[in-house]
Length: 214
Image (cartoon, rainbow, N blue to C red; front, side, top):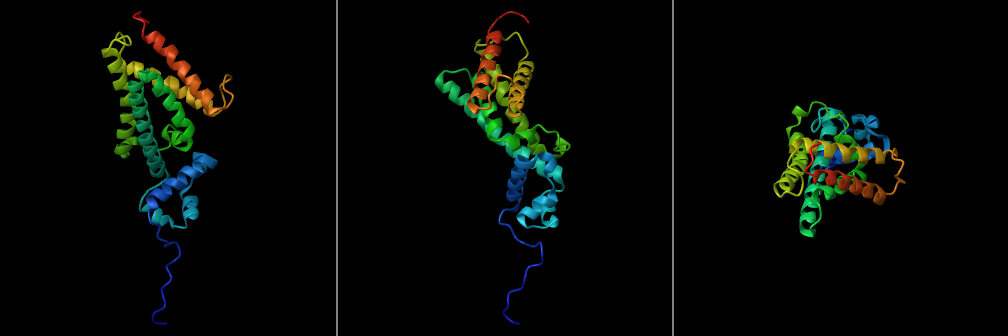
């Protein structure tokens, strides 16, 4: 009949911002089921869109996970930068404060955190923006170490990149083990895990302020 609206074909539902909706659905699914529980079919079903619509934005599951990781590293880098800036203003130790911010980020963004370090994003060279954000986050730590060495607040006897690797690995291990309940001194509270991170930072920095070779 003339004037009667045409029905959209099944799966042709138009989402106002499908790419971000897909990312949001992925984050929710990872939170509830883990990365292994994420499938494009299920994501499409949640949003009422076809696989074809999804493929316009993400070629496969790895591409969607890379997008989640990209968002995570972007938030993470900003959190580290903010921690350093606040520490400078307050006269606190920026490396210690970054450790606390790292753990706080992991606690507040567990789906992002799990994805960022999962190895499930495929070949990183296919995602240059992800590489840039990840390197940017590491550079916040590395540049801060160099600044602290230049100001003689920590020993300059050690290569700053090696120190950054060690500090990153230490706080990452604490955050990861805490989140899965594998720390005997951790009772499950967010504040306590962050306090363990602060203690770890102080112990590391006590050694770095020594001029002794180790």
